[in-house]
Image (cartoon, rainbow over all chains, first blue to last red; front, side, top):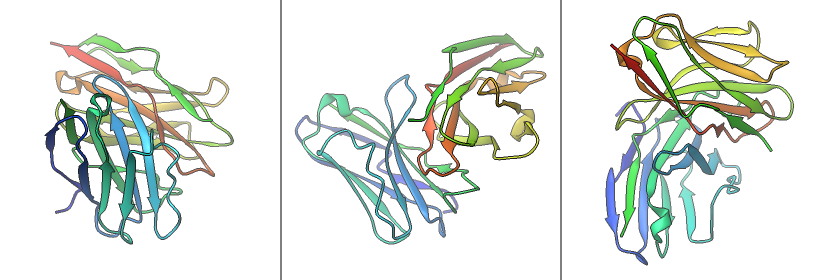
Length: 115
Length: 113
């Protein structure tokens, strides 16, 4: 597809289970971002990938959160031992270049509910 | 650390009236500033950006924003609001030398017929 694709769109899980969220960026986009949006709140930066550079993990809230990206393609965000406070919409975005352009293209998000 | 403040949680305006959504920022060096809109159950869509040049930036759907360096503001405006403009609006900032795009908490706009 032409846009950023995220899956699953909705995920309900039990506390303590691991979840994996997937993001397919727009082809050719070198930069990829993950954000978290809690209900009624703004976007919280989680992690940023740019090409083959080391990712900026400064926003990951705990060591239960990790993310990977293979080259300039798919990224997965993994949350281990989920907690109820992890419930949120996880948004992925990509862009052609990190600098100058800056325009991010967002997916529609993966809504995670931890029971 | 960079930050964005959107002081209004919600803005109500009558259709046809001007709309303003406020944003102030804090960042080291020259700012790159953005506005995004989020319609219900949809992802964020880019509206406009300020990188350099003219302080008045025009974007999608008739929106514009004015960069004011002295007031560190980047307010979003539309001369005549439509009911379809009802959505959640986010201001974002990044330093020219940085990577991370920091978002404000969002302002919900409700345009009444």
